[in-house]
Amino acid sequence: MLIIHGNIKTMADEDFPDGFVQIEEGKIVAVGAMSDCPQADAANRSGAAGESKDEGGVLDVQGAWVMPGIVEAHCHMGITEEKKGMEGDDCNETVDPITPQLRAIDAINPMDAAFNDALAAGITSAMVGPGSSNVVGGQFAFIKTHGRCIDQMIVKAPAAMKVAFGENPKVNYSGQGKSPSTRMATAAMLREELAKAKNYQEKRRNNADEPLDFRYECWLPVLKREIPLKAHVHRTDDILTAVRIAKEFRLRMTLDHCSEGHLILDELKEAGFPAIVGPDMASRNKIEVQNMAFKTAGLLAGKGILTAITTDHPVSKIQFLPICAGLAVKSGMDLEEGLRAITINAAKICGVDDCLGSLAPGKDADIAVFTGNPMEVFTETLYTFINGKIVYRKDEKCATINLCGKKSYEKNQSVFC
Image (spheres, rainbow, N blue to C red):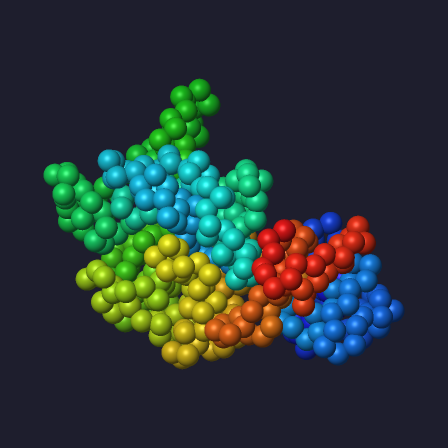
């Protein structure tokens, strides 16, 4: 496939107002200006203005925005399924506050309607995992948003270990008459768990015959700094407690939600941990989110803190992720930084920027084509590519010639391929 005459937003070093992207075997092999297009003859045969004509695997997008697929850095799609009540809710194992051994891949249902909503919004990948009711919730996975078999959708698993501070663990377990019922207990229980995990790591290092303990084996990638803690934090005190513990155990960490991060900018800049901000489109239905605002992401990014934006689906709908970025820009975030917050910054924070997040040779051909800036509410998604294949297209106006040479049309409706 060769995408031509696109307004190419690479999220890398250089953009191309009239450019091309060349795809081979699911990877991007070239990106550049149309003057450097490797198949100029095919490009010149494309249709006249206002007409969509595609020949020999060439897709003329006629000035549409061509971007890396949008990345959701934190959500619960497929674990908290829509329209299914408790039968489809596998987000929290709320009988034990410490459950590191849980794996998101054992609960994600790709048949959840949210996956089609994501594709229709140009969202091609997401960090998905358990919720925030437990002090330790379990292991997140980073996945593509197209497929029927979760094992074939995985980019990285485990990708992070979920931990939670603040109201959620307190509310869940104080009602059961057990710890944690205070913030002190949440911190103490996490420290105790990490200390036990370090002891297990040392035993395994010193004795090859040490029996495998499933409860602590899952901590080894965290202790080796291969994956981060994924810390649910809203209030300033909870944010700083998470920072304190991560530094104490010398761990990587992402600050998820970070709702009051704008109140402690200097401290967070010094701490050096990235932030995943949101869901600012949701209501302020808890005390700890009373200072939640769209300005937070821009203030963090302006301070030089690596920042992504999240919907926290289903807290707010995953298809609104580009709009959330737009509202952050409306509240002061730099426009380019708003786009980066849902592409390359999100990929960096999730540890997958080697293959996703920007249009560059060697990266996965996960690409979104829009009528304009996706952060604007009237913008439509024309095409979504994952691994070089069209998995969503808008309608007849975007008819494509498949690599087999057969033209496909679906009139006046969205098409999931």
